[in-house]
Length: 167
Image 1 (cartoon, helix red, strand yellow):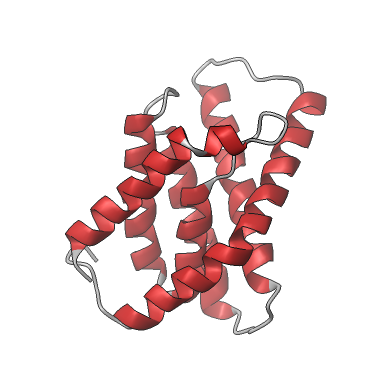
Image 2 (tube, one colour):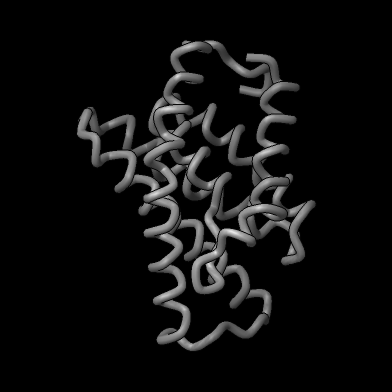
């Protein structure tokens, strides 16, 4: 697969996430477009490929976002690694698997974000405020995976086992 296509394609997704997705927010929680695509890719391809997508997507989100730099990158890398490893040992073809893995990937990314913010001295909202927001993001991303996972699966089939030069 052409690395420039991956770089600019994920960059476009990141741009949509930071510009359009907040308009579609539910109770202040915007869909995580890049997270859904990266986790979907981790289910369909190797972990290394998903990590490359997570790195590129995270760097784009960090560059375009307003939070501490590296926050999105670390969260996406952790989610891609965890989901990719689970997918490599789990050979289930259930239609619920993408929903469950996107939910797990979203939770992992959020836990990494919170841990990094706490370690860096940022104050976090109380758990009773934070937990419903993370739960809502998990639901929103899982629902978003319903149309996105099949699209990522088509792309995965088209590129087959092609490798990025950085893999």
